[in-house]
Length: 475
Image 1: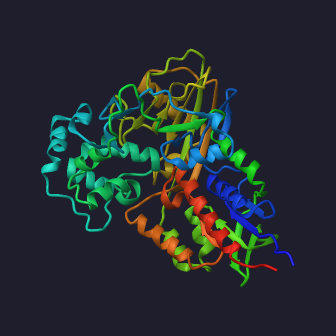
Image 2: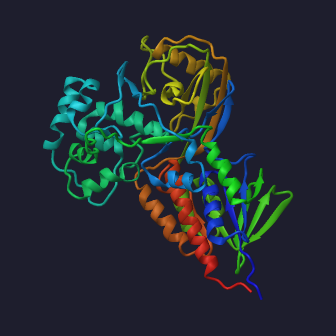
């Protein structure tokens, strides 16, 4: 008797789900059936490349950390190496305290490694607070976690938190420094403090890369793909050869004693899918709901992870429009126009034409809108958001040119907030899932919101499910 080829369901068609499908195909071979079930009408999740004035343009994640190996290794594995591009090296900036400054080097997520690195951004009093921080009593986390904002304000005062750390964390997590936990967002800093670094300045200084050798250049920090990050999604779907089911929510997940059963589609006319293993690669609210009966403690941990929404407003400006010589501008929370009345709508701009050399004409940029809790802001119409973002652009740069094309992409509720104690929640999730046969979880909720971190969770989830299936004899 021949062993029956296994069937694995991957719930969620974002980068985590598709990377898991690919790894499952590698581990289980061509005979396995891998079904990817996605409730929306497209694959890719937070990776989305669209057409903007004839150009392929990312309105979700636009880049990935190149120095984290998982994304680059996967790209090499599936034959996309020739598509990799790197930023031009033009510097970013931050608008804080009413002025736009170059984003300082020698900081770690805004935490300064020296007072000289950030002096241009701070008042004389703020600079003195940074300089004197190592003389404060040593930091002792006692194994616990703390909000980044509270720690930075306690050690450096409010200026570093508001003008640097806040804008940078807002750009990565669509969150607020006062709500985000140190251990999940800056684990390297937390580890150094655990080992006795004593001060934030010392910890950040330890994180700084060594100067490059003579005639050597540092490897690029970020990378992207020439035809958009979605080409990674497309290639994964091509090589993994899954059965793709779009527009179908998974309503119920249940263990049948020897395998799994998924109820998918509408409540009125449900379908049922029987399979041997399941990878859940969905946002926290969906994971909480699907695991409520199977793994209540895991479900409860997912339920404690809050999520944020945001929108990307992409603008194509007429050829020849002069952008600033910057890759973009982060905007500190609470900043107002020069009239001291009008608040900014955007939290950041990316001047894509400056940041990436593969874009030609027209001039392309994007504004990001929305932090955790700013629901009213995102209830505005597309036209209102475009108008507000254009006004912000004019205020910051003087550019008045009317766009020749625009795209508004809303990302609702899928951006996990790494709050205080998040590492403990993830530990509870992974320990609890370890007790459930043939089930694994992946995605941005776990170990990082970037593409490489999501791929790492997908590889781990696929390996867990494959080990379960390959360890069974099916006759």
